[in-house]
Image (cartoon, rainbow, N blue to C red; front, side, top):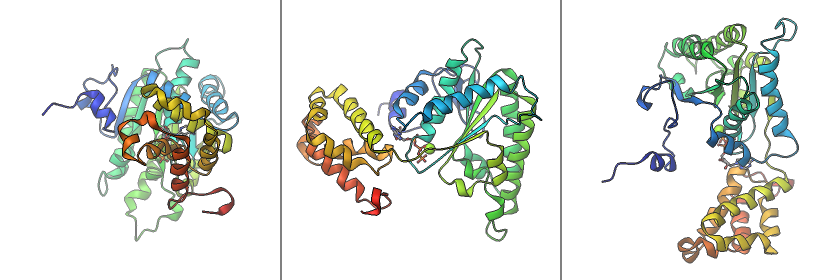
Length: 326
Ligand SMILES: Nc1ncnc2c1ncn2[C@@H]1O[C@H](COP(=O)(O)OP(=O)(O)OP(=O)(O)O)[C@@H](O)[C@H]1O
Ligand SMILES: [Mg+2]
């Protein structure tokens, strides 16, 4: 059997450290608790930023906040302007938070290009949370106090804390019967670690994501310089995401491009309102899977089948349909 290439692994959703990683040696040597690291800007991350479509000027606002963090923190007294270098993205699943966080890291490095030397590090939260009884606090301390501090000392650094509720669980809501004291202490260690890092490294920015803002410790929330709620796409954005997904299909199957001009496309787009961005992109896949002939030749996709797939997705459990109907 042929060994899986990097491309195969990535396509299969296997997490592999980026090929251009230059500072940490071969992929197998990623430090425990670190999911990925590499220099910035990183083209695939910049592409993620472009692929996420948000209503209004929310992306501009995020980028401005990230850039400001690197502009102000090295120059202004933190007791007067308490910036922690922490941006939190919250919102329902599938709204693009992780993609935005990665894209933001790359675009920030591009915007501050003259400084150069930007680096990206992604924390693997579950590796820390699962470290074992009595160990998560130690693991958090090691990761923040040693690994991240050492990388931040080398130059500008953006750290992704994905699904941060696992790291900074709300201590007020943790019952001691159900949660080992270690979980409480891990949150304490995260807060203490963030404070120390913020004081020592003004060129360090954390971007955290969560779809359970209510489960995050309030002291962590209070440290965030910006808490951005990433909502479900509005009607126009939902239509634009659907269009973008069809255009991606049409790159490989040009005959599918005509779907966008079909009068039924507006019906399909309207049916996507209420779905998250991930679900909207999956509508295109689901529409191709409605019959075997289209599965064999996705160029046969029709706007009517897109509308049908979107209707089916809206009826799926857990989908919030505008107006409350299902
Ligand atoms: N607003 C959006 N515009 C375009 N595509 C989107 C959008 N939101 C999500 N997507 C698509 O859904 C995929 C999943 O997004 P991502 O993993 O970043 O979401 P998430 O908010 O982090 O989800 P979760 O909360 O489940 O971790 C993206 O790769 C993207 O293709
Ligand atoms: Mg995510």
